[in-house]
Length: 126
Image (cartoon, rainbow, N blue to C red; front, side):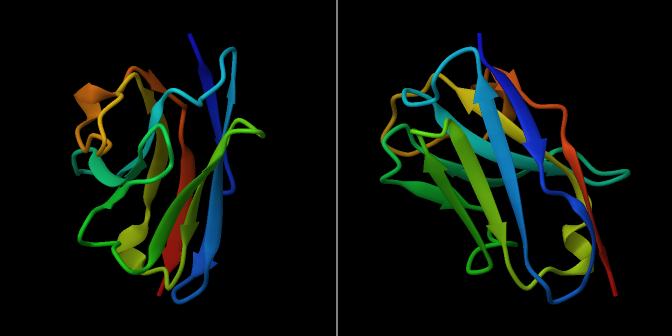
């Protein structure tokens, strides 16, 4: 199994940037699809972004497309979520996930992922 630990969250003002990191241990992530999800109070867990095992394909939610970027550094066993032009509606707990998917396009659904981090809080003020 793989353990995932998110970091980089915090309280920021709208319009600024923030980068989240997901550090994996136990196993390398080179064969995993990696995803980011978020959950705001009173809302369901929402897909944010994902990257396939090779790093060649990414997927983004419409709400973040053009603002967020997902990347992976397999040598560091780390996945990143670069968040630009943050909005108050981006406020949520952000979760990193790993899934045993070899598909060309990484999955968008939580059930397709096997391992989860404990989350990091991102709060964006007006």
